[in-house]
Amino acid sequence: MPDVTPELLQLLRTPEGSKALAVAAEVTGGEPLAAASAMRARGFGAELAAAALTQASLRGRAAGKFGPDAAAMFFTRAGLEQATRAAVADRRAARLAAAGVETLADLGCGLGSAAVAAARHGISVYAVDADPLTAALAAANAEAAGLSGRITVECADATTVEVERYGAVFADPARRQAGRGRVFDPKAYSPPWDFIAGLPVRVPRTVLKLAPGIDHALLPPGAEGEWVSVGGDLVEAAFWCGPLASAERRATLISGSEVTGLTGSGMERAPVGPVGAWIYDLDPAVIRSHLVAEFAASVGGWLADPEIAYVYTDEPVDTPFARRLGVTDVLPFSLKRLRALLRERGVGVLEIRKRGSALVPDQLRKDLKLSGPNTAGLLLTRVEGAPTALLTTTA
Image 1 (cartoon, rainbow, N blue to C red):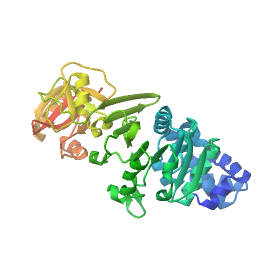
Image 2: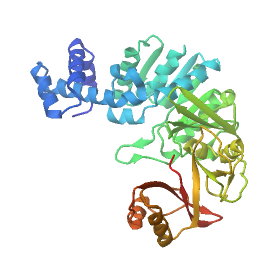
Image 3: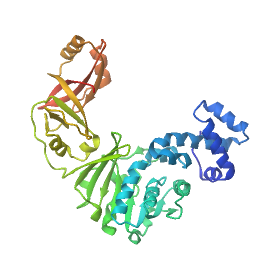
Image 4: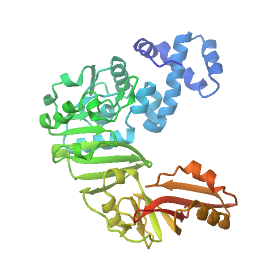
């Protein structure tokens, strides 16, 4: 099924398009040919039917990001993949509103999730995107949310916006290029990094949404670097600039309606000691924000290798920032010895995790020739620089 075009988007927003979307929501999810036949049987033309079915499919996929709002929104496949989750956008908008922001320039607005969230918190938003279709989708989504009065969307080059007219700026530079996919060099962002990095000088209250792998060295002076995970998946980094900064580094974990944060300098070093009775597999937001030492201090823990972000304790400590596993065995890595131990324990199902190891879990699982009724966990890591295997509980 094709993605939407500006012409099809306009058609989908007519009364006839609304009927097609309603029918598509009923018939989608089954066999595609049967769904298309059902649409034609209701009298819809092939082009409108295909566009409505595409939107119904995308809306179903978008529910995990946008909840009930997804049922009335418009998407492209690429736009949905890159869109900010509603929970992340809402938290950011709440923070901006709490800081007294009343007007916001949204540069690179995409499907409009950040603009909608900000408007719901009482902020007036001027949103731009360089792609005409994307800008049209953002405008349609603002209208679907009943927020057209608070959100103005235009197709424009972000570098032409007079950002000084607004109380704050939110910039989400494009990190993909046609034919090349995802780009990792900030110099290849669109707008380019020089423009993005200069925004906090022009508007002190600036927030930059960036890839989670962004170099900490690119943080503007005095800015806060925040890394955000949702349900254990690291989704973005954000640089909070000027008076919006409230910490040096922050790890934010969102799980359902629960939001948990860890802050620190990101410059501390955790103590090093022997493998303990419990090991903590940290949330990626904690690792990316360089807050491993701060986390270790929060549980009274330490590292077994100064370069590996596994934290150990001798007593179990509940924490939202890591998965805790009990360590049952510690042995220098040896395929033969590990295979013998697992055979002795009757382990047929093995959950393998790794950090600091070049081994490929799927290949290792084959080489171990597992057999038996029991389940165990295996962590491949280093201890004092030496390859080490840790057998763990799987709880």
